Image (cartoon, rainbow, N blue to C red):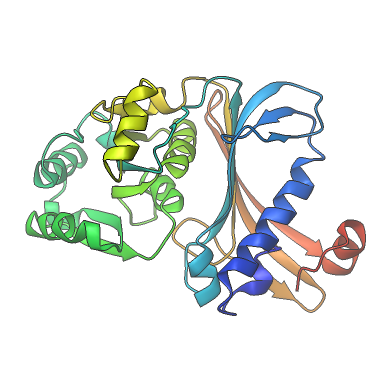
Length: 294
């Protein structure tokens, strides 16, 4: 909700900062000894030692422009079970639902993966819908996917939500394909571990210097990373809340003196997925936190 007040205002930095501040405020109240990728400690220092991956606002530009699919998301797993990407900012990814896990091969041409997923789902390639980030680096990929018969849905930002959507019924998404953020790949793997989908990934160094740093750190850019490589633990929790309405979650809706949020909460060990619609009294929330939400 901290970010939602910036929807459509053209200020992605303000939206992002509001989300970061609000998430940090809430995390500091949680009974856990949490550690982020960058070594920052979160939680109140008590409770279990856990790895924490967050994206306080996945889709800063989406929020600023009032476009769909912006979410706030957090993943928590046992300490030492989340993949540390080193210097790698980006990775290649393919995310699919349960039927496509054994069909995909990130080393194969995109057309082969489209045909394999279509066969696994028992449908025509023309019925396969693929989400791809709209980037110049994906021009060739988009052409190959379309030549294979797939429908390509281009998004400006935010590939965690479509990764989860690929494993969720009724979203109209069959696959996420392409190069995106490495931390988001780890969060996606955590979520897919909960809902039953899967991901394959490879680190994507942007230049020779980044490749050298990865090799020196013992990370092989050619290695295919699976869901279990990205999150090795079996006790994983993921929660996401919609900021703007998208294929997975509804965005924040405002009432005369309140707001309604739509969230999904997942646990891998039990396979439980909860949908939570919450109503918030903004006067009370602002008094409690000292922050603005409208």
